[in-house]
Image (cartoon, rainbow, N blue to C red; front, side):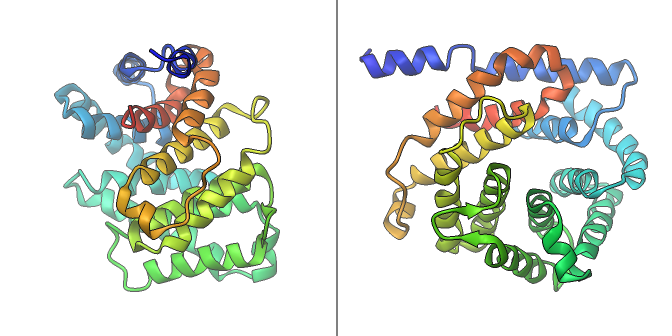
Length: 287
């Protein structure tokens, strides 16, 4: 093992599949006690079911989604509505319950209201929150039957970027950079338009100039997930031929470093550590 490999191994100690197993067990126990799980935790369980096809996860998840269908309409605020919409958009891809698809459609309608409001008012809102809503709608285009949804979501993404992007400075705060990069990567995955992923790369490079140590747990997990997605993209030889990619740093290593910094909090947070589980699963796919 080389010196660099030893450093990487030390940085990533403890980041393995056992953490995913622990989080899964933690959430299953919570559900068995009759506790309600939020959209992030249920999204994590969906991802675990897709990866493992475990029957116990499937059974618990089915019951939890039925409860979520009752809980989601009570959501208030853009952030909460976005999280539920994203959950149902993912769930509709594996569930044959028509109510799940209907819930995704209803969520999209709620989020789209912001796009028809006054432009000046929209520009004054939290950029990262707005971009997460746009990304949820982009994900939902794969399950929601709508002739206009995809075009509207892409147009809103491009409008927000045009309104707030400054060359060399990126977009707003470090949270805005990461949220925008995530939405751009999702748009790239749906369209194959390389300028989207290249701008995501640029925004993450700008974000990396800002120390993240004091940032909230959920933000660090979101940032690690975006870095892992970029690392996966950069490993694609065809993509490297088509795009101008950043040569500064190793996104996989960066994602691991950020996750290692959050690992001590996971067991204390329990089911609230779901964003960590989603990011860790993406990072482990790179190993």
